[in-house]
Figure 1 (tube, rainbow, N blue to C red):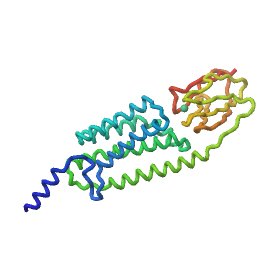
Figure 2 (spheres, rainbow, N blue to C red; figure 1 turned 135 degrees about the vertical axis):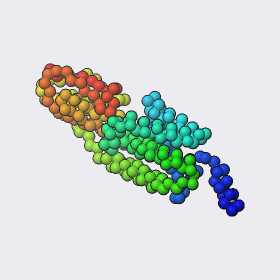
Figure 3 (spheres, helix red, strand yellow; figure 1 turned 90 degrees about the horizontal axis):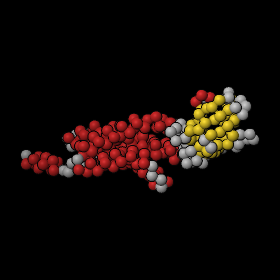
Figure 4 (cartoon, protein in one colour; figure 1 turned 120 degrees about the vertical axis):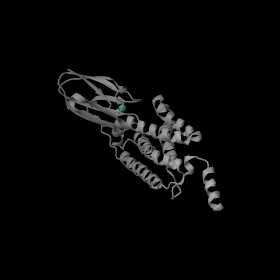
Length: 261
Ligand SMILES: [Cu+2]
């Protein structure tokens, strides 16, 4: 009898950090959520550190994860809920952009961070409820955390391999005489105003960015994919008039006018 009492009090005196509550495999949902939150944070910070360019928008996306990890140290329950809610909110908010980027693995610098972000926020969302249950009752055996971690790791590694092969297969298209030349650099079209004569128009675009762009004209059904550091070409027919062209992933920053005479 006395042994039972001793072991119960030992259980209760354990520090209530989520990472300390393990399932039968020795790896708990709290620890998984912690790892996933660090993964989401890294998906913002690592590319910014590599390029030494700190986008205020990306920093504002990263900040809630830092807050969540700090809260976790003092109030584990609040931290778990915070990270779950923030992960779900950012995942839903980013969904249109994710769909656009995750279908283009050839753009490594976009694809790999976005894949890590998607998998991490998904896992941090899913892990929230079992992590809370394990916090409330540390002895609760909730399997699946380890399997989820392995699955997430496999998806990220497989995605990275696909991305590297897709990038190696990017082929440039040379310009021809009479093409309208456009450059995309630093998330801008240069020039942003182009003119064309005649009904059949050929545009040659040189993408000097390490990010993917598109040359898109909705009214004309033009949607040219511009993988990083590549040259591409598109031909289309247009009646005289003014058409707006833009880049789908960066529509607010990358727009221009095509005037056809
Ligand atoms: Cu773009």
